[in-house]
Image (cartoon, rainbow, N blue to C red):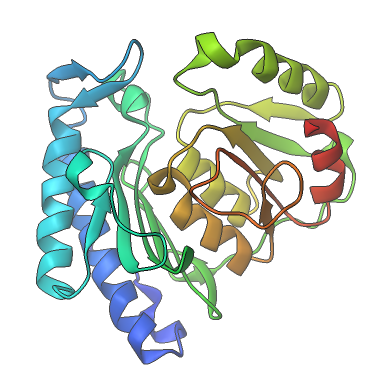
Length: 272
């Protein structure tokens, strides 16, 4: 944590700078807890047939709530694990938090997971932070000021040919209800691109689009805490985010396509 540079100085908006610092400090505190518990035995609770919850999710969430509550007491918080917080009106300003995106990976010691924090106002993200504790990578963005990885400015790729593209995707928890559609899209996309990656943490997948490790990402049935931060990261890094019809994106919609912009129309055609 001490090695990471929080790029608040790059943000010209004084208010966003304060909020970015608050989000970074909360994400780093939660990430430290996750990292410390990574190799420890876990208490696993089932939220669904394949949807896991560990004691670390709850500890990380408590750390984020405490940190954001101290730094921004005026702002409400929507978190994944506290269902009482899910009633925030989309038009208001509030934090959206996933304390541990990729819980299944964490529970299996597969080191691809992240903390995700975004500030939404009127349904759009103003500040975004995604922290991957195992790689010690802090992805940040503020609206109108750009996106950064550990203090370094990041951009999406400039690839224009699908056959050269590496695309990320994910599978919804309700796979038994969506399997035919998911497999149809997967079959269509994989035949046209260089390869597909399914790593299991949508927030980090979106951060990878923003920094150029993936050329695009798509998935269905995600939640606001999965995508809000990554949405802003991709756009501030020069990418494009929409639904599968090319309409304006909302984290309250059931589908997301993020890309480097140049591949967006071609990917939309494959997802129809």
